[in-house]
Length: 266
Image (tube, rainbow, N blue to C red):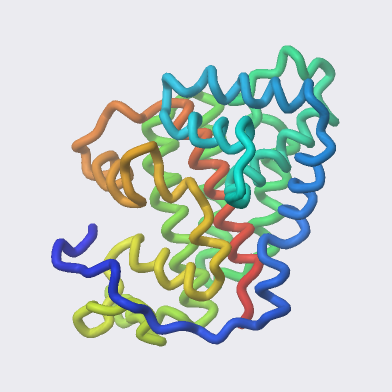
């Protein structure tokens, strides 16, 4: 939950960056996606854009992704779109008939699930690593069973939980009983430097590595902020977005968060 009196525009404490690490933001996965985008050809590009446009009515966020792919811009490609391109390349290589492939079915493929879990296993999240892996496996089953309300609720929680574990493991958060303390005082305006929301953790993460801030999925639709729809869905005020489309977005975001964590240096 966001503090109503929190000033998001206050300056933050800057963590000194390793120039070489900054240069390698997004790792080879994103570089591979960029290379694929440059060489993918008109047919797979058009099919992906069309697939995203077909999903716009289910979640406005797909329009953001489609616009990124369809229109030229001086702005860099959003990293969650690059993560999607990474898997779209896999689909084009592995599907027997890509022309009949339905984009939401990507999450159910063996290659998506194997890549997601391999990337997860490569992280070091401390005591809860094995338990969280089991939870992710359950969300994949919920998606396949079309139980999207359960899938989305769990995914929202685990995305924040994985980010929290990573920030603790790398020394940026310190747990004090049920509280989390901003060790380097990165986020201003927090009483006792106590981190209370996902937004605070995102703020810390983006100061460690700007890669995280460029994940467009932090805005879950064209108008809401990182917490608006998430908060309302988890707390019961929004029951309209428990859909396959939102589940799909969150799985791509989950993979993008894991990709971010792989860039962290102790």
